[in-house]
Image (cartoon, rainbow, N blue to C red; front, top):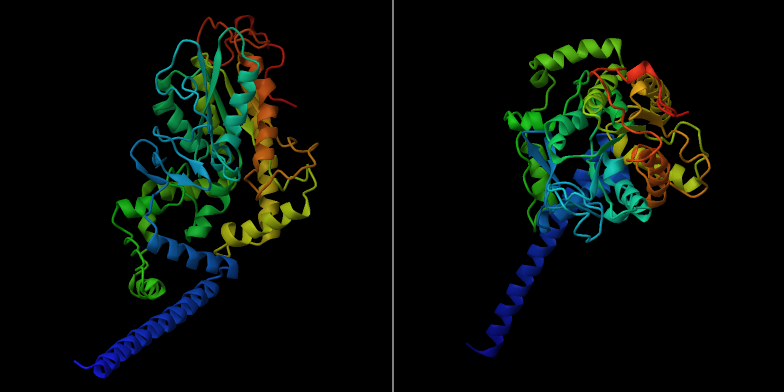
Length: 445
């Protein structure tokens, strides 16, 4: 073949490839626009719509590692080795504290000189908002305790915070699993997720009412496991947005409220919600279950009510206010379920009611001395630096402040502290010998 025909073939092939690439690019741009438009029509903000497109690109090209999966014991468990938002899940399925100390990383075995503290909570305890495992509340608390350790004793604080966790899931995790790893103290840090699940999560999913103490906080695992929702198609690498648009058009949305209405517990929850819209009775019973078990086991327990950005205890900086509003628009309210003003009012009212719950339980368990209910609503009242990254998650500075606020309460219940575990003559609430109230017991002011 002569040189001229060969050059002509190469030119035509190159031209054909170029045209195909232009068509693919044009098709992708068109589908990108349509997908973004559909998101906007569904009530999503422009920022959220663009984040969705970015997530689709990442999903197409990056190896997916799920951060949580179904677990028959606690419904949703973090996947060992998973990474999310700068945090890393260890081989045991919970978040380590970002160090390599072999003694403090021992689990589930427990050496004699190790004092083991379990810290339960949601994503605030897990550390969403921190730059890494070393800046979470459990990590800071562990470090502070070990700075003052004496007599060869070491303090281990295990981070059993998990996104979406609240008092219902914590009660199950403590009583069915963590009770068997020899804890010396239990700490629970709650409030936000209990209120969120009671007031808003079901609305975001599109349900008529909540499900009480539902371990599947998104409601979707229940449907997937029962074959009621199709799996999402992974986008193609070349036709990313085209494949996503085709999937959205062809995939039937089978999420209908009648799929859950057949569940007896769900129907019963609707009646509970009418009487108790804030879910206070649920939170009370869940905390009571954990506290009563710890009381009878003579195991120290501290239940902290977390601070919130809407209670007016501290004037928020302009950057904090901007981040809170952005989080509301892109995450909390992405389905248009409420207004920012209504959301803030409801959460503020709910936290005020929860303070009453904690005070009541503090009085109930006061005679034991080693069970305390403490509000940290004022934790940031004297802090000038930014602490919130949104309305529920804290930056490293905020986590350090919380750990320092927890520290004296923890130290008070350590062996040799001012509040020692009472020797009970008979099991049961209020069975402290002589019926006397130990100094400092009960709810903190």
